[in-house]
Picture 1: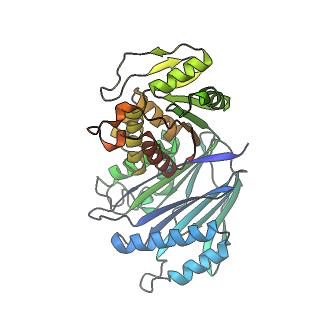
Picture 2 (picture 1 turned 180 degrees about the vertical axis):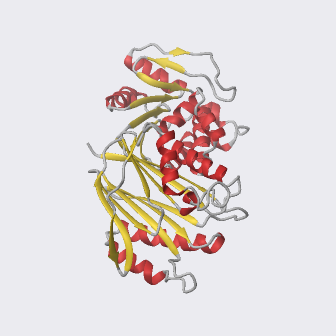
Picture 3 (picture 1 turned 135 degrees about the vertical axis):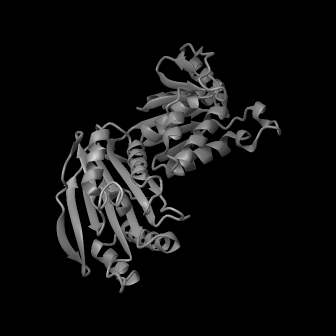
Length: 390
């Protein structure tokens, strides 16, 4: 089975800076996932430009099949060494994980990479080499399901400098924090949120440097399949329901009409609950063989809100408290964010007349428009999405 990766990242800006001097670039090729973390020298606009340029150049070249030598040579020519500090204008870490498990890590003047397997910290077998005249560290291993990689900028390792420790808590401190707080089952979003929040504490809520954490967990493929909206032609109901049920994965139905179609085709009773877990989200229902049955448009709009918040990097305690709620919107959003790699949507194009009321906000007018927004948000979260319109 091909391996998949779940990725999350979060940044803290240096105090009094509007822009972050770190940049994350995430790309997916036909056979691998590439994550690049670049840290521009200094802070603010200059650092932001340098890190973004570095990550974009590396990502574009690697995506198009360039060798590491070619990438580093291009970076060296584009971003020369600072003549005053004699350091690179931007450091970077590259993590490339192939579907086969083959993993390649390149570290150029970055703090390093935390690696956990089976809930234990392990040291990665880095070796020094020279590429295009630059000293870099490389590592090649075979990843397996459950492995966790944590990349970071030096704002993480410098956290606490001058206050709680002379030189910051370092890579060892960050590694021990991850090992003590994460058993190996937590999602990358929980890891990035927890580590950056603790760094902020070490900085006494005033980060002295741009601070970025990127967490990558290797997982087996997990599919969530969603059926929402009745097909245009009623004679297609049975065919679509059978296609939906034939797929292996977590089954979700969004919408009362959709749930009734599945109930009729499968001859299974639909039990509707009257319990509200959130006053703004309609209650759910249950059906044998279906993992989650929710209301349609209002619930999907709530899912979209949570996805947008996640993509904006607002991974704080309040966000996770909302994500852990028991209403249908939170439960579906949690599935999409934390417990899947692929999403297959079966979307009926019949429009419910109730949503054509001009007094209802635009997001509720057309199901298809909402689905396209969801697709964009889910893909930004690093998932693979496919849609079948019926």
